[in-house]
Length: 114
Length: 112
Image 1 (cartoon, chains in turn brown, green):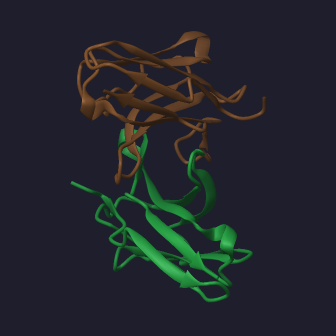
Image 2 (tube, chains in turn blue, orange):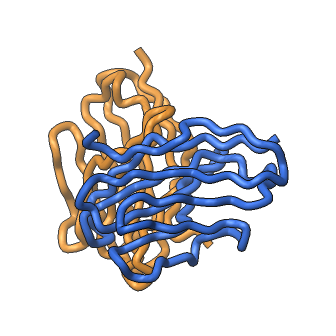
Image 3 (cartoon, one colour):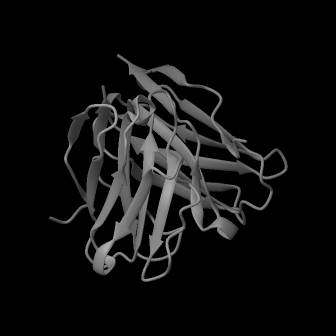
């Protein structure tokens, strides 16, 4: 496909379980971003990958959150020991290179922690 | 500390009239701004941008105005159409941190 894809589209989990969210960026895009949108909130920046550089993890809300990007392409966001406040839509975006380049967003993964 | 603020959570406008969405920022180092539009269950899509060397940028029905002294920008949609009903996010790149900072968004309802 031509756009950014994310899986799963919906995830319901129990408190305390680990979850993995996947993002397939647009081919050729070197920059990849993860955001979170909680109910009634804006887009909260989580983490940013640029090429092979070490990721900017400054937005991760706690050490339960981690992300990796394999081979400069697919990325997974992992949330360990999920809490109810982790319930949100997790959005992935990719862009060609610089932070000002248009970001193309995936449809998001809606995470519900019971 | 919110560096990009959209103080109106929602806005209702009659079809055919002008929609004006506002955005304020606090960081004087911001020199580039973007607007994204988001439909339910979809990711945001880029709409229009403006560089601080300009005070206006127009693309079809969409115009963004930038007032640097007031640290304020606005998105005008004329004429408003039903398909414009969406959430609009204002955003600014924070160069030093290499990230984009988004506002909380404004939900626009276009009334028939």
